[in-house]
Length: 453
Image 1 (cartoon, rainbow, N blue to C red):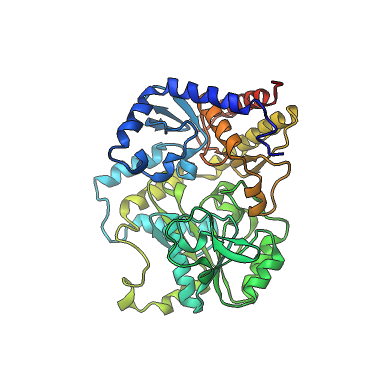
Image 2: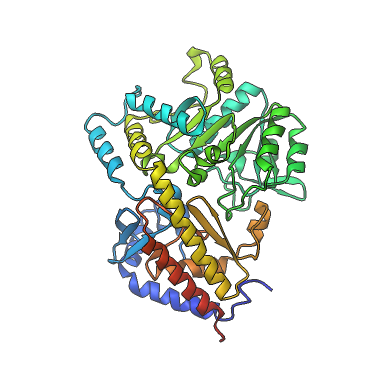
């Protein structure tokens, strides 16, 4: 029996919540209809069509851990731009730096002293000595993959089933009956993913060693923990096995910290002593201004330098006209220096522990076959009894109807969770009352779902 079938009241409750949402958001509904005349799908980015209420809330302004919409509602924001605003919205230090930099220039194709400060700070946090900059983590991952191929002479990469690395073509792959295939919903893939990619399940050391044993893989691109299919944590010893297998087979290890920066100031890498060859990160490091970075070990930096003649530095498929612009670097310096500090992470993790405990208490009180899992200041609940060990297990534990209901129930009560999955982030601006409000709403949803019809 599916989880949805276990809740006879779900369909009726969902209809009630849809009616409430439409009644309370007339201005957003009006703007959504207007948008259909000029924006594809009626939204500025097409994934915004997937909102639980049938149309998106149109925002007016945001500050700290809250935002407001065109119908006058205020929300506690646990989505926080799906990590892009993990700093809280418009942190004062970042805003000040951006305002000052705008008057001095936005993009110059020249270095600034801020770039030096940011490179030194990233080296301190993550332990990799050399850095480059991009505008998104997707670009950082693309560039890191290209460079890994260049220095190893190998063409393929390896990723984990149900990973998330932005819109990198090679990562939209899954494994079915031992065969690499396109992930469902992949649009316009340039080539069959089996030509570029090997895929294994997270935490499966045997499969990892088997695929790397072919010695045709340039790099493993890995999140330290899966984060976009529910949080799937590594089993004890898994990262040690991953590092050992990559070194034995001459494969470079790229760690993508874009989501797992939630683990601490130096991400999962610093918190758990990882030793990547390259590291990528984007989203929150500039307080919401587009920015990303990718770092290199001493060895890889030397190999990259040797592989790129100076005369070819601008034609190799690495970089972009607006990459490393001075506005992004000013925002990164302020954000890393004054917002995403050690003290901020201590508070954020404590709040996330409080969030986790509140959800677990509600699950226990209502005898629900669900679980909650936390990674630093990131937390998620999934509709299966036990935490998943692999991406496939996590995907199988999803329930779209319950997802939609929980999101809409929360939204109608002033709480925004990350769309498409039940993820919440803490920011430096989040307070205990915000967390307790979510606990109250989640408990109420659980009570209504489990009430006898």
